[in-house]
Image 1: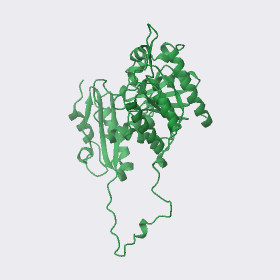
Image 2: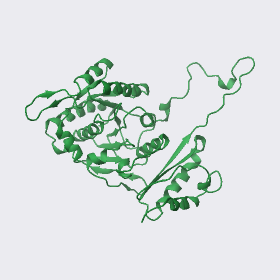
Image 3: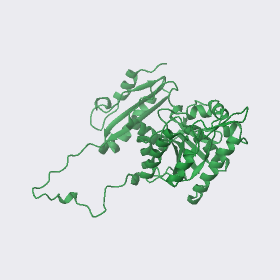
Image 4: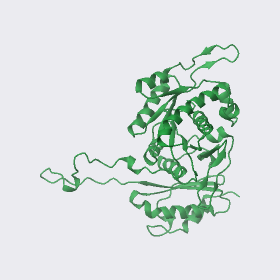
Length: 372
């Protein structure tokens, strides 16, 4: 049974709005997106109204889920603070008393909004300044490496626009809901896994504005029953935008791993990513040089297709750990495409050994915080 926008609107029209009248008449609903049997939309309100609107968001989600044919629904509650005009200055040129602050008392730090995820001891981000450097492949193999070292590990695919984890683990199953209406992550290869890719059609583009992206990431962090984890590995989207800032400002990150190729163009963007994490006071656990070199499987000739050693040199220049080199190899590509990462398909191979060596270094940096 196909779901229509009219059905969704009719279900929402029965809900009251904190502003009076029906929800559909409050002028807060975004465009409703329907992908087969999944429904997505946002409720946009002023920042000061968020507390009053959160119950409405939950009611809207329940109402839409009750529509025949709807299998999954995500309702994002987004808020934007209205600009406030600056108070007029007195003729004397002295600012009013309300604007005076003690020396050094600036605006509250964005980091003051951080809150730990219940049950999760440590969160690390795997990030890159640009796409196409193998960040997601690195993230899942490092997660598997940490699991092999005895940790309880989760993997969150936070790349909203281009989720790769469903392909990497070979499943498109949908997460179930527990008794508290929280999503239960999928279990694969001993990992607890969550991705927006489990909720949307793989062939449908995610055309969302930044507030919806931020809300989706927040929900996947907070509205998922992660259980007890020693570490949650977050596969970040490329770049230095809203998603990265959201994660840094809402969750106390133990640190970030930067993935780059040796190529100068990739390193330029890697520097930006590293600088962003430094600016928001997130420790950089190190840099991984992916696609470091290619060694011909037939003649053994080594070719530095993207150059070589650039990430190591950059790590030394910036004073952060260099975690290791991962070669450009067909086995890594083939096992990733097949949904059986190399840490699973060939755990004793040379490529798995390279990921395992990086995981050991990460574990050494996590130990002081009792992540184990």
